[in-house]
Amino acid sequence: MKKRIGGNDEIQKVEQWLDTGFPPLNEAVSGDLEGGLPCGRIVEIFGPPSAGKTFLATRAMIAAQKVGGIAVFLDHENSFDVGLAEVMGLQSDEDEGNWVYKQPDTFEDAIDLTGQILSLVRKESLIPAEAPIVIVYDSLASMVPRQKFEKFEKMADGTAKEKDELNMNDNTALARATSANLPTLAKWAQKYNACLIFLNQVRTKMGVMFGDPTTSPGGDSPKFYASVRIKLGGGQLKEGGDRVGQLVKAECVKNKVAPPFQKCEWNFYFDPSRGLDVVESLVEYMLDKGYIPKTSTGRIEIGDKKYTKSQIVDMYREKDLSEIVKAIKSIQAKMKSKDELEPADA
Image (tube, rainbow, N blue to C red; front, side, top):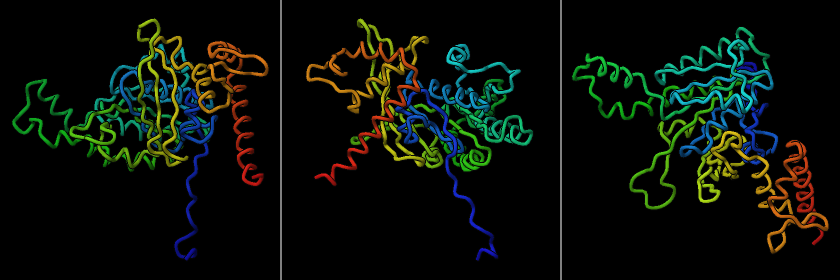
């Protein structure tokens, strides 16, 4: 058999991960606090407004640039705040060659751009072969299929005819566009070592009595071809009665690179200077997992001393994030070792 058809192809494995900026989310997606979003795959991040979808995508773009990669943002919503992204650490100088920002008119234009960029970067060796390419589509729901866009163009300039009236085919055009193009995008992601991130909105399904009534636009194809689908939700964060942000709850509703349905949550503030409060949310994560002991009164015990949660947060703010992650992984290893020994000791 081998002589006739050749040897087996190499099974694809994720060799590179892009930091999301929040270790527990890295863990939920990749199984490792120091992991993140997978390169060589399609990722969908969907949720309500102001849940931090663009924030997470920007963190992935920054992570790619840090290791010599290229970040591409295809802005179909025309709402990307490059100034805020720069504050976060994104390099947006066009002359540096590691940042591409475009506003495509149609879904098909975005796909064409994707192919051109991926092919050019790899064929011209614009970055090292091992460096990743991140392409963010904001958002899938706003990507207008060409057939629909052209009809609106004709309506706008007064040249529309009866055949240009919107119909049921136009309502399903996006689903058909994703069905036709996502298989190719999945191949490109693997071939060119690219992480293709589709940000998406949510819609409410009518008449659903049981289960989750929400879905994301674009038909069923994104649900099949995305290796990771992260659903964002949550509630309000208030200070003094004013809404200052959101408690974001993330769930990996699909995961082909690590165990699925892992969850985490974080505090996301509308104030750009705060954004995702990593330290505050990490302390909440450690308390929830039992990594930090807590008394019945809610105080936190470390040695012989007791602290409030805010005091612990202030203490951790003085530490480097990598130091905190290292400490958490050490605790996890000890807890795992203890769990493995308990059955034998019983």
